[in-house]
View 1 (spheres, rainbow over the protein chains, first blue to last red):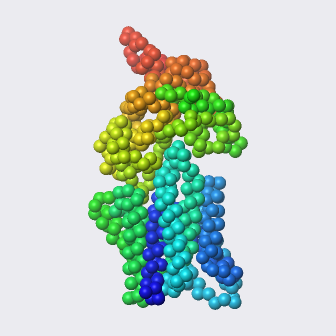
View 2: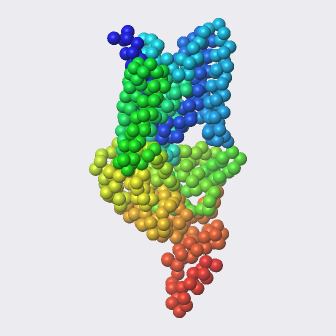
View 3: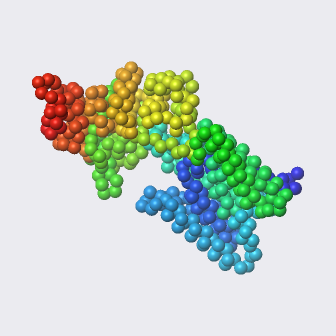
Length: 266
Length: 251
């Protein structure tokens, strides 16, 4: 069954959606959307370095994404405005990555595969990496759930409860780097943030508690992955962007549904 | 031993010394209010007690196993974060729904558990914060200007609620407040802070201390007059009240 490329692609898409859902909720709640973008854009530099040293893509992308996320975390609160800092770092990293890739004249690289993903070419090994990363991220977030939620709500409240919000921030940063590294193959560096944010934002209209929102986001992400791949197959469209399109349509439909019920919009 | 003992505490941010050689202690069942002008280090002192700020010198000793209920100055719940009152009550402590209901009742808001936090009024929100802080039956309640955004009757009612809950349960209270006239009557002890402890003692002693007058005598003349008017001052009904007020305020 796993020999069918569509089955592998679907499993990979669902794996990423599964990990991106709870993390995406924190990205939305903590207003870290641009932070996710910056980390993802930096990963292309990791891809270039991995190819240059003829290493597998995953560890290189993970390492650079992690360095980027830690740098941003470290510099925030040291006199730089967050959005300016991210604007500088994200686009610099993307530009340096693209330039670095161009130096690799010996190897023929399909840059599009890393910018927009190449989910239909997912191998058995890729599938293992995606699901390994997804299980790790979900386990990490489930383990720290209550602490992460308290730190997100109020830093002083977290300290007074004996938690360390800085450590929780690091855990989120680590989880983000892992999701970015595993999602490159599926949606590419340019659309990873979409997969984090759109399902979580769509789930907001349906949820009464944080847990419910994370579970709804996972469901919406899964439907988007499956629907997007089917759509890509039927209409012969690029797979990664098709997944994001389905998520966006779900977001729009659920938002209208939410307004109809008089709920708050995100 | 005391619940909280602060000894010669010094807190600095870079070259700025916020607190210098601050010492005080809080005993079981006591209600202590910290007053001080803006920038006097009140919030830094609180942050140091809960471990959110590094201390430059001195010691903070908490009684082993001390349970702290913390009511923050303000709590912003992002619009994107769905949070029912019931879920918020069980944020940090795994407690039963019954206990959550009890705590909401104790804080004076028994019927809110199904509501979303974002739908509450300012007064309801602060009471839910209080209820959450009370939920694991803390030994001490820390309140950092917990009535910001409430009007005067609202904050007076809020402090009365705190006083009655804590007198009943024996929970100690350490609170920061700007509203001297409202909180001082409920306090066993007042600590006047301005980078260091200016003076401390019973509300009446602090209110008449020269150090306290130097800090609050002019800037908050109205508030002080109101406090004195409520508790110290016998009305002389031979002359009109407006005159008496302006006389106090100008003092």
